[in-house]
Length: 442
Length: 122
Image (cartoon, rainbow over all chains, first blue to last red; front, top):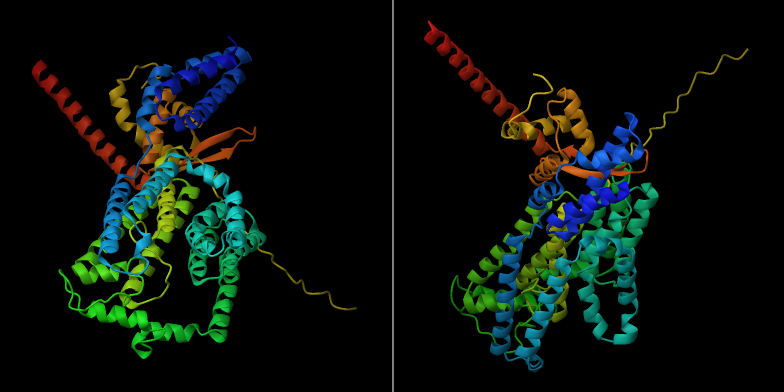
């Protein structure tokens, strides 16, 4: 038996004791390096190379004992708190949607049925479970493909799917921040050039689907870029880096205000009573319905068919508050508050920078959807396509959110076996120009 | 204390995380380096096996006391370095305090014990 085989044999015996297979490469790499270092030290002390390697293996201790100790210490870390809350949200969502379908007579209700909804629910759970058990670093390694696939689908799906592409693209937008986070992680040391390239990547994603929804999720991408600038990942001066990121964004915002009716829309959104039969219709209806809502029990407002636009999907919460009282909103806020709080605590404990970025992007996407949906349901339409993750109606959105949940849980589960290079920000050299006094002219 | 003296392992285990955190507070190190430095600085009193060190390091990592990252050496070998975190620094302070109290208490008992023996001999 050659000595490399001794090392391999030892590692094999150690890994046989460790039940979590994903930990094997990490353990192998660390123990193998250890034995090689030890062998080099023995060789430097005068041993021949082969004996040094054999002795190095002997110094490691009994492989069964080492393996069983590592088995105790390397275990997947399921985020049980998040899993439990997500399961409760999914279950409540399923029954709430069915309740709405049974109780609201709308013209498009015919297309809903239990079997179809159940199938989508199962597909969502299967998607979450499948992504959960896949090592999320694979997603990071394939992030460039994911980015191109995202752009390609959003830009060209209309040619193949017609109006259906509208829905598909909106669901894909939910994945935009996590795809961007993974791409961003792969560009750690690129200076101002790298920063501009990543900024361009954000703009391309937003431009590919020039909607308010795309801009909202684009804001998460800009936030991720800001974090990278502030943590020194681009090795640029922070004030200048932030100016590069927010200068064009501010200019674009200014252009939007000057050249579109965005301020008028915002004004109507804040005061829907000014245009109760036009743009303020939804807001006026929501205000009227919620004015009669009780803490517990059915509200006093009357709801006729078609009065509340899209009560099954966009205004599910408004309708449920009317039916059961403000207690519904309190429960929803508590559930999503718990989900986001568990997630934030877990993120703060992650070792992997990639994990923090992907989990942060997924959590921010959940948080933003919740905020937009709740505002929408308390004050009329702000962003009509927002959904309440895993709870409100929307089959595609349900699956997209389940994918996000699976990815988030995969990050927490596999953090122990992800070890990456440390980002050490390079100091930007300061150029000092010293002007020496010129010699007096003769 | 001589380097040939055999230790009760349980006596050693309690203080090991204190020693590891102290070494990592001085500089980031990889596993083999930790064993070597610990051995040389203790005059070979603390000769750790890999099977003791790595689970301990990994548990400290789980507690958030240390964090790990990969770095290539001059030879191109990618090593896993351990670095102390702010949590680890405060844990180290607690453990130092704990050790100081323990050390003083043990000495008091031992000194008291010798005094009793002398009194009995009289």
